[in-house]
Image (cartoon, rainbow, N blue to C red; front, side):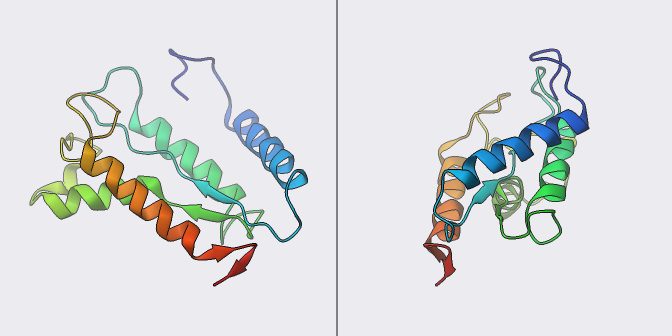
Length: 140
């Protein structure tokens, strides 16, 4: 994942690191607590230091570990990737290209991975909605 910026990490090593993190979180929480795991947000094609294909790979690994199809099904997924793609689609007519072949300045700052006000707001509302659904490990 973005090995030019960081270190080269295999899929297996990344999954093992995430599983270790899961167990550290789980062991420090009450038994009825709920873990909500967020996916990584899209990278626009104009950004040179990272690639969206890395994000898709990381999110695929996360989904293999967590959520309804994962090894740890009790973990809730907060799909930040999908939230930003949807936020872009709601603001543009030709949004099918984001994030594969076009940027979405509505959710990202110009040629950057940092969020615009709309992007930050969309993620905040989605995260709050996801968290508000759970209380002490029980669906409300």
